[in-house]
Structure formats: C-alpha cells, structure tokens
Length: 225
Length: 224
Image (tube, rainbow over all chains, first blue to last red; front, top):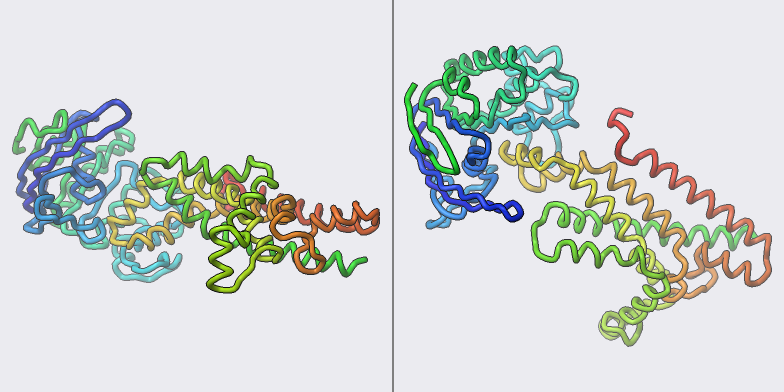
C-alpha cells in the first residue's frame, strides 16, 4: 500500500477550535498512527474514509486519488473501497451476525435475509468461528466476537485497505493480547494493507510496521519497527 | 340516531387517516432534516412548526382561513387556476387536522432519528450502501417505534380536532360534521342520547389509540 495524506481542517466544538494539519506518506502493509487521545487521529482516519471532508488538501490511496480539494475531487465513502473498523465496532443492533457480515454485499434498499447462504459470508463465519452465533444479535455477543463480526463485515467486501480505529480499546487486557495476535496473523494471511490508529504504545509495538506519532493534529515523528 | 353517528365516525376516521398520512410523510422528512441537518435557524424552524401545539385551535383556524380562503393567496390561486374551493369541504378538515397534529409526528420523528447512532449510518456508507439504502436499512428500522408512537398520537389528536376544523370546514352533517363537532351540535340541540353515544364512540377510539401508542413507545426492548 502507498498512502499519501496532506490535509487541513479546522474543527469547532463550542468555543474550542482544533486545527488538524496532517501530512504523511506511508508505504508497506502495516502503518500505525500513534498519539494521545485528542491528537486528531480519528478525524484523520474519518477523512481518509470520506466520512468527514477536510477544508483543504489531498488524499491518495494506492495510486487512487480519493480527495483533492484543488482539483475538486471528493470520492464518496461508498466508492472509496476501504474497510473501516470503528472503535466500538458499530454493529447494526437490529441485524443478526450473518446479516451484519452480509450487509455490504447486499445492494439496494433491503437488508440481507436472516438465514442467507452466501459463500463469502459462510467463509468468514467459519474463519472467525462465528458459525454457532450466526443467528444472534450483536448485544448477545462477547467483546471478542463483536470485533470478529466487525472485521468480517469489513473484509467480506474485499476492500483495498483496512482502517482500524483503536481496535483493542474496548477489550479487557487479556482479550486485548489475544485479539492483537489474531489481527497480526490475519494481516499476514490476507496480506491486506492496514492502517491502525491507537493511543496504546503496546499496539504500536506488537503491530509494528511504520509507526507515525501524531500530536496536536500533526505528525511529529516517524519510526520503522 | 345511530346512522348519523356512524356517518360522523366514518368522516372523522377518513379525515384523521388522511391528516395522519400527510403528517407522517412530512413529519419524517422534516424530523430527519432537524435531527441530522446542520443549518442556521434549525431550532427556530422547530419552534415555528411546534406552534400549532400551543396555539388555540381557533387562532390556527383563522390563519388557515386567511391562507386557503377565497381571498387568501393559496385559496385564490386554487380557485382561479383549478376551480377548487376548499372552505367548507372535508379536505379543509383534513388540512386543519394535519396542521394541528403535525408537531406530534415531528417531535416523535426528530427524537427517534436523534437516538440512532450516526456511526451506524457511517458504517453502512463505508460498506457501499447508497444514502437512501442507509435510511431504509439502518435509520428507519432503528427509529420506527418512536415515529409510530408519535403518529398514533397525531391520529388521536386529529380525531378530536374541533376548533380549527369548525372554522374552515364548518358543520355540515354528512359532509364536514366530524364526531367531535357532532357532539357539540347534539348537546346544543339538547339531544342527550345522541351526545352520549357519540361521546362513548369517541372515548373508546381515543383509549384504543393511546394504548397502542404506549405499547409501541420507545424504551421497550425490541424483542418484546
């Protein structure tokens, strides 16, 4: 993967303003952006996915221009072909595990059937040991299962890259160690480019690759692990 | 005695159903706009649209007369171009009921849409689902209970509409005389039996609707 980000936005929350001025280039399949909470990591990740629109700048992912203010390019989030793992997973509470995973495969105005039989969905149910809970709702799952459902939902659409927003923050410490190893193995197996943001130095150390440190809306340091 | 009562009930149901249907469509659209949109004057718009809930129905009726009456801007246009005269028709009763009950749908819809986590909609977008698909597959399934509860209240309010309706639609038996107006007329004419019957029918309908509304109100678990 090659990713090129050079964006600026000003965010206002009441009287407070926050200036995001991020510029970096990353290569390789693993990129970690590390920084304290409030450093602007989530905003930056949302901008890459097209969920927020920067005031100015350019975003390029593996040769595709996703956003270029000067050229008037702003690809919709639907067409960016990125997978996004939300911090608290954002599973659809009214849909069962199978429907959640199949969500992106089903186009149109209707949700996937409760008891579908899609090969791609079956594959991920099996790969993540979710067969037994395929008919359950997200609220009935454990933390680890929720994360696997969210990962499966993002991966089933075969995205060009996977963006992960604090993927382990919602888990208890023991589970965190296990899910880190799982994600590590998954990345090696699929060889899918991953961009992970975290405030936990352990995540950066375990996940490795290119580690960029972010503070006050800007990249301040770059390391390779 | 029973036949005029049934006629009045039928008319009330027809008027209330039309008014509620119109309110549901407009209320969902404006409620979604108020819940998700970020534009100046948002709260002012909400306050303006809530006015019918606090204004005396006779005042509303007067406003409606001014707008849709023969000399009003909309009324004159309808008369001159389409040859339609709304005043003293059941359609005027629908307009009156729709305006009076609108805030109930709007409030319910706005609150229901606001409880839906924006992140779920974002997740659906990133997965490639179109904006309208996101609304139908994520937002609406998570908000419909609140919307329906508001809609049922609007239906009950429409059934009971009196003041504004009387002013724009009058009280023509079999044509614009709804249940609540028929009750008033019966009492005025000293027909206690008719009044009793009409009151019973009205009360039963309202209780039924309120029970339905409370069963659907948010806060109950989805599986219940």
